[in-house]
Image 1 (cartoon, helix red, strand yellow):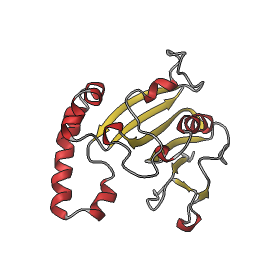
Image 2 (cartoon, rainbow, N blue to C red; image 1 turned 120 degrees about the horizontal axis):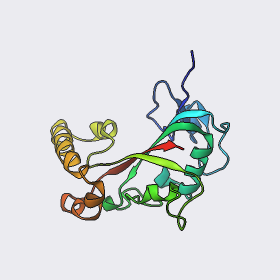
Image 3 (cartoon, rainbow, N blue to C red; image 1 turned 135 degrees about the vertical axis):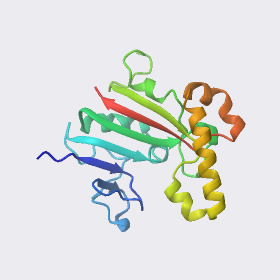
Image 4 (cartoon, helix red, strand yellow; image 1 turned 60 degrees about the vertical axis):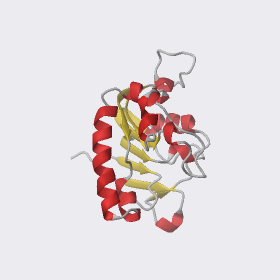
Length: 188
């Protein structure tokens, strides 16, 4: 039986079962201690089937170089899911280095020579989330606020994801911005 290798980069306090959990902070006892700002990462070329990086890239100086590293270690046909703050919410954390938009996948497409980073990913989906990281917000918000916001998020997400480009450029500001944008990539 072939075991699928899944890696959760920047796990923090939210380790995922069935994943290799990676973080720089030794105190949280990750499976692999790794500073994602230092290259290369301690993984072999074409070795990982599935990568998740949930609210990590915005904290790093070189998010495009991180994506190149993810490309190096992911198998052909492997999947990479990136969740980052959407630019419409601004830099909501004092350590965020950048915001992200629907244009992020263009850096990984050969169709645009001017911005292509030299590592190709197929974009499977781009999704906006108005109410992100519910596992974290459930700890911080009152029960009523949490559930009302969760419901509002489902409704707003539905309409936003009918056309993420239109929403990201036009109407997202009418609802106070979106917490996150999620990219689902496949390594070509």
